[in-house]
Length: 118
Image (tube, rainbow, N blue to C red; front, side, top):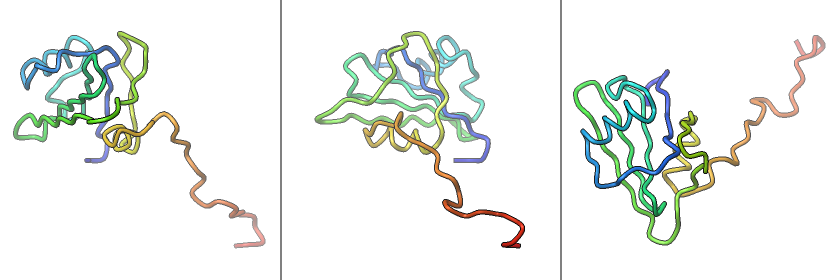
């Protein structure tokens, strides 16, 4: 993913029969964004086991789809809301993991930058 690319999650379920044009319209209507911006837009169906991701790569729209066979994607219950995810959270979402449990760790755990170490 290119630096500066944002990941948006539409919290309300979307008709998973939608393709490129239908999801591009959903980006405009639900997320209130430009589907050709280069950002990533994630949608889930009502059953919760199907995910579609729409992305403009500079030359065309890309559509990624995944269906979980035995589980559901972790999704917020705030219908009508839109969330921004980090790329790491999106990777966990695609794997079917609970992306809400990510905690940032200090880059240098236990490292103290006091003057005596310089």
